[in-house]
Image (cartoon, rainbow, N blue to C red; front, side):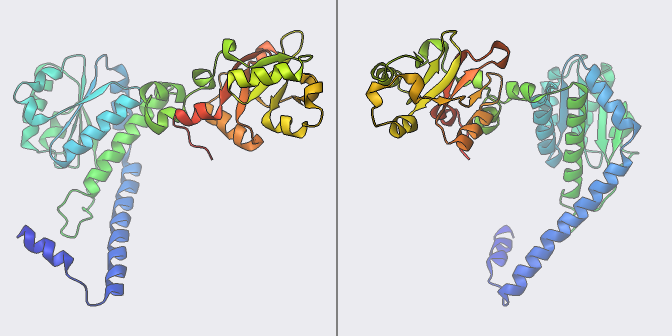
Length: 340
């Protein structure tokens, strides 16, 4: 039967243009149905949602999220979202729970159990465990009279919206609603915990998200590696310093050690005539662009692109203009930042 369905789907339509239009219409219909259901859920959100947020805030252990089938897939996602946004959480498979994994669910935890019908038999042992040991139970289902919501300390009722599939049975609208409710809980908890971008970086050190939240101080070269020369340094000495450090630039500092200029390749080309007879202060670009160590490296990269430079000296405005480090465009690219 499955093979026949697959082959039927591969059959070329008599009118390809009409079939494309029908496919687009089917997709839009699904989105319309699910959008309407989400609007219903928004309007239905009330005191029980606030109670669920408070129960999670008060939790001394973990939020243990459980569900079977498609609800189980959604439960995994909700647990992952909670864990990555400051609320310790884990997924518990209800079938595995019945064979020893109930030990994952302790008195210190809160159980968040998902089931569209609220009568999924595989959840019975998880529900019974929470009742036996006084573990707070938040139930999510569409039927208030279901075993799950009758047993729950806090019942989050999903709207009785139709599934968006053509036969009205495949979990579509119901899983969208459950996932959206999980997102709503996670974001409400983030706001309660005053979860910031810096906290987010702690849980996302890898990939593009982590790279976008890296600070300048995390990538910059330290003071002992900086190519620095005095204002009155001969250009012969300055060229040697640029070559020795390998950044393609040199910072020019005054007698107090403050950065007063930068010499780049462009400055060297613009001053080729009589270059070696000059001193660094005569060749440098004055008042160069700099970046503070606590700024995001993504901001530094954007500034480099804007100024058409390949490196920025790092200074702390609270400490004047003394150079603390240097950030090169290659440092940003190695960290995974995108050059725009």
